[in-house]
Length: 175
Image 1 (cartoon, rainbow, N blue to C red):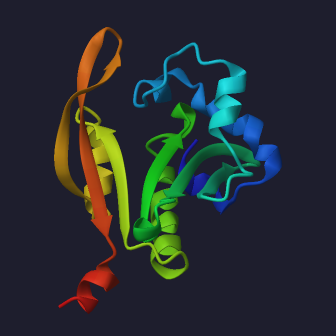
Image 2 (image 1 turned 90 degrees about the horizontal axis):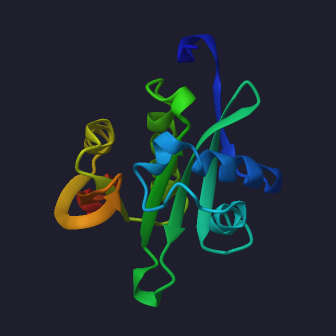
């Protein structure tokens, strides 16, 4: 299934998406790139997706009426960090390498820059996840540091890059 044959719709999350998102989180290929373990309960997965909480903003990627990915922006609850958000993204393994992650990222950056007054977006990514690191760099994220032995999975410790993107329009205004 190629992206050129199907239209991807990026939209806000709905209450009925919660269970589909919980199933997506349980995709074994995605778990390898998160801090979750493969036996997280359904209740725990649902607790991760809290649409009632004021802080996160969820965007959903949908193709042929099927949820295929999401991006979430967690805005800071700290008074002096309201301009900062943490980003989490996942695309189901059946839909990877089709540009869906890039579309989700671009829409979340547009939302952050133009509607949410977010000037700094942060994320963690495995140093071994070359595709994700490459995408983030193309979209303006920079590696700000490396967390040594920060994640454990498949019997090994892995390093994580700490990456961030500063809004280009904000940077221009500071010159």
